[in-house]
Length: 421
Image (tube, rainbow, N blue to C red):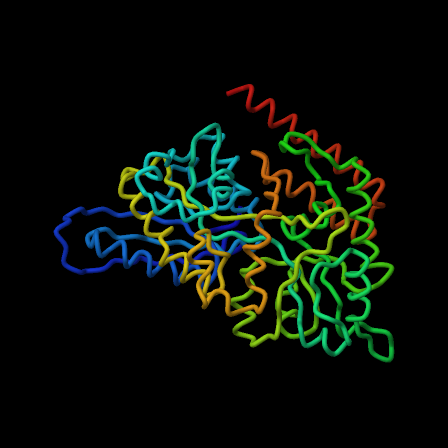
């Protein structure tokens, strides 16, 4: 693991405190581990300011992780904090990590706090359902993201294409071909699509084909389902047959999308922040369907560490971080889609992109990203083999077998650890 400031975990740490007069003389120091970018940090800062209006003598130290290298690395870092006796009081994290943390008993149940906070009825019930484990809720939802097709409207117009609505894999493929440009020497100057290079981004392609790399309860591999290989072959052919996408690399192509060098990418609402800054003429569309129109959902939540010496105060901080004001601000600045329906219905949130209402409209057709307790291992296994298949380093037939074997070995190790507890 690299150091806090030099690699896998790139974070900034800021302390917020307000000095407004108050009858509350509570004095304490809280540490908050958040995640995201500028939108999230701004919303967190203002939430802490509201928290300090009630608790002016409580200092809140914030570290924010951009999740540049995926949730598996975040899990590794958080576990090292707990193992080293240096855990924070409040953690912002995501569904990919919930099962890992819940099975280790690292966070306190929040059901009593939720029950006495009627404002949480403003959240879609499915978000709380996915935040629960064995009948108890350990995380309070915040923003969420479902992967959509983000597309450059200007490039669609140049190619003479209608804006996508409900489309199929084949229609998407033809659009990607028409959106790819080459110079006189045959070199690509504009890609039609970026075949995803992250686990979360690629999941909708499996879901729309009625399958998934893992089984339904996330306890074993499902890689030998013929539909998994069919899906991988489709993505492979976009790269090597149609040549509308580069081979997935270490870096995402968000900057190239903002610059008009890639016409379509698979992302969530979080890219809106940079799209606004780039003044990009973009919109979102539903993912192309093969057997259905499902897509993947991932979302964040705040939990209170079991090691916190100020658990009740930490819960109050979580309340400020999940308030309507915070949810609304983060969504409007370009963070995730607000968990609160009232925040997602605000005119400012719906103003951009033009089809912003699609985010919430598609929520009933979302399936959580597979997030077993050994997620960090599963993600690395899948992505290592996926990239090898996309790069033609290994055939898809051999790749699915190897991935299946490695995943099931990981699940056997997990089962052995669980039995040893």
